[in-house]
Image 1 (cartoon, helix red, strand yellow):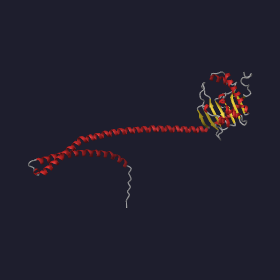
Image 2 (cartoon, helix red, strand yellow):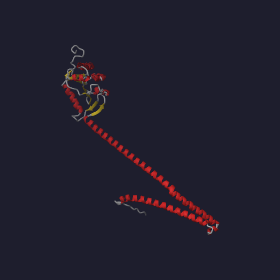
Image 3 (cartoon, rainbow, N blue to C red):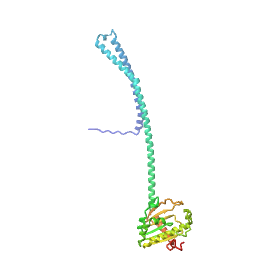
Image 4 (cartoon, rainbow, N blue to C red):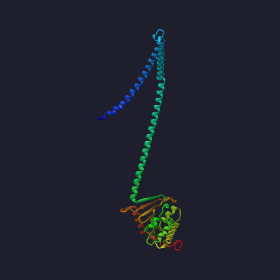
Length: 331
């Protein structure tokens, strides 16, 4: 039958244990010092005993000299005592001291290395904590941005709209509205998709460009370092190009407005693409944002842009009635 005993550490046991540690160290040092002096005393006694025994064995009148065996034994024991005593003294005062010095040097070196390692670990921990905090902050900001983007319907961003493929928007939207200054470059880049779209009479496409008589053309001419008549000609060329592409029977409407375009808009049935204009005179890459319709949110960005384009079309004039570029009335 075994008995199981349990021990509960009292609340004040930890301070007592902490106080006991230095006391134990002092006790160990004291024991070491006493043991050292014991060795010296023992060595001295051995030397004295060896000398005395050797003297006795060599003393002519001593009884021990009468027996050769005892004499030889005494001589050997005396020599052993002398050698042992001398070796103890040499070891105590020379070898042991050097050994302790080496141990102390190694202990100091190990202490320095441990301190350096501790500092390195602390620095690494601090750097890692900073990286974790920075990464966590960046992740939280990205999550917050994702929530904001989702709230407005932003689903895609491109650094340059020139790399974006408009084919899906052009071919699969039953109603498509394009708002641009002149849309020349965009129409040329997507001519094949537009030709296919214009061949389908069920699809309606609306272009809202700057009117050739708009006052803002004077400002744009100064911005791009050209003439106002050159910008008018570009708009007329766009109308003529659309007239040619629209010969397939599709419904195409082209309007001209007298306001200012802050961005180009390409609005389909389910999503829209926005391309902001840059302020620099030179043609820098224009970013692209794709926004989608948010069901149940009447004030989402997609619906706002769609309503804005529809309202702009109502305030614009029909441009397909303009004479083709190069005709007598246009010159």
